[in-house]
Length: 370
Image (cartoon, rainbow, N blue to C red; front, side, top):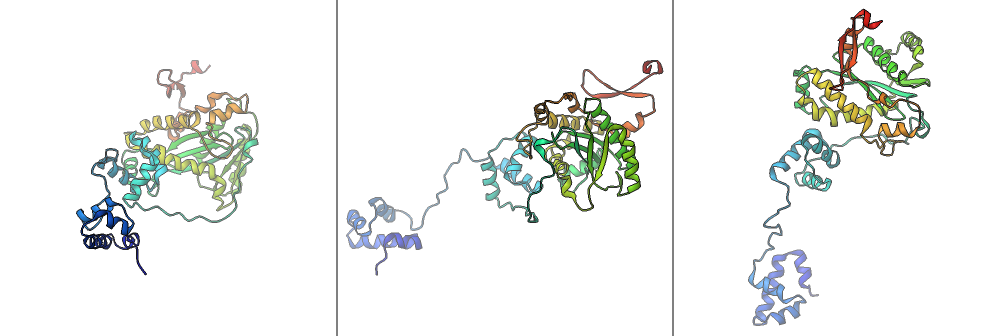
């Protein structure tokens, strides 16, 4: 049984070239006869005769389109810091550094540098939709939650340290409309039931003044900043919220999946807001200004691909319902709850500054109130 040149080459390129040289020597150096015997081209015979015994590297001598070494090092560093894969990392780099890369480029760099993928265990089960999204009325179903901004498992160490050392707010209060994905934000340095009720009344008052007329159900967990699982407190809160046409509907203990909309938005807060902008804020009011821009971008311009949204922004989804709700509702003022608490009964009111577009505090005299 004879073995062909190609079979030998699959086993060992070096032995294949030795075979060519051996046959070539027997044919007195006749390239054409050697090529005919082995079933290869004359060019292959000449390469075996004149070249090295082993295959040369196929790596190009120059790679003008290859990503710069410094940029590749940055990409690898951010991938390991954030644990993002290529798709999320591509958007993150564009937002943080204004660097635009193809997803395929990022994926190739991660593979080349052997950046391991973070594995997440999930439970098997059928998909359960929280609402009938296509038929939801705008601003009738809400989800309410708080977010701890100092989260070591979600933020890079540098961002975590800056939030702590710069004295930025520590907690986010977040109310989201299920139909349009509109969000209403506030921040604070402490969590308390007083702030929880204050935030609710503040947002509901804002919503009602913009022509939202229907009943409002608010899904909420059993955190201490809300009703803490207390039936008495829940009854009292709902009695007081009834004047605003709203009521709280706590989720069962451990049923966090019922808060999926607001929980998923918290991940966007980490990736698209805190990781990008927090380190640029020297103090809390600069942070609130950035947070206002983030909320307005979300409500007006950021497309959502969740159920019932199909790539539309909250503003587009609201317009599609053809309701009589005033679109200005989407520009909810992002405030520090400690400041709102001080304003109550202090002789001040919130005014919109025409130049900056931001809400400011102004002393209000008795004759002005009249």
